[in-house]
Image (cartoon, rainbow, N blue to C red; front, side, top):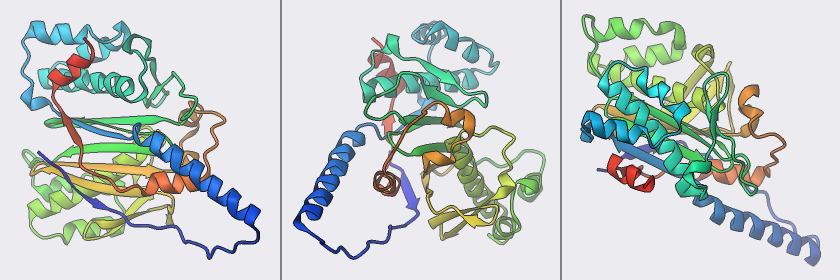
Length: 314
């Protein structure tokens, strides 16, 4: 299985290089070399993983055994769900977090410390000296659970399952979300065509909004109507916040299958809300490094099975 993406395109202006002296040229070359070397190191910390939880059908005993692989404080968050599918998604989400951190940073599983901000944003308490702003984001809906990580810039991930609403039309369903949409977005949705096309259009906007809010660490109180997305056939996606273009953010949409979408948001750490920003204090990232990190094109997700994740915990 593969996923396809639509990407935003932005390239920083390249100033004409004026070599004032051989010393100045050497310093610039050294700086570029350092950036390139750090980029090589950081590429291993940039992950996009997906699990199709519909393919995992554990017995109650197998599920319980899998849950015991997590730290005790993580288990109540799984047990609180009534529906089996919800418990599966919650368990796999946490398995993905520990597995990715172990796989990417090499921290022994029993030493990984994951905490949450007041808004519920998960973050790694173990700090990496080379990449102290390493962060990750998870999402799950429908058949899929996913995780994305970045070593330098903020990253947000959202997954949406497109399903026809019950006991109401697609337009009635979408109308209940008008307070979260701008006039421009609403007009684009209702002019998309058939009810199914309107529903798909709405889900794209919703997926992007959620990815941004999750990237900055904001909670449910963030005003989604403040965000307005623009695009050209869902490429060159851009964002305006309170009417002002967010030039340091890039967005991608993925079609996972006919019923599922995923979006990735990447942006500047300075835009994180205070509670999340405090989880990586005194982090200084060079502007060139941030531009490079945000501009790296998105590729297809790597698919894992639950069995493969469990093997990492053996």
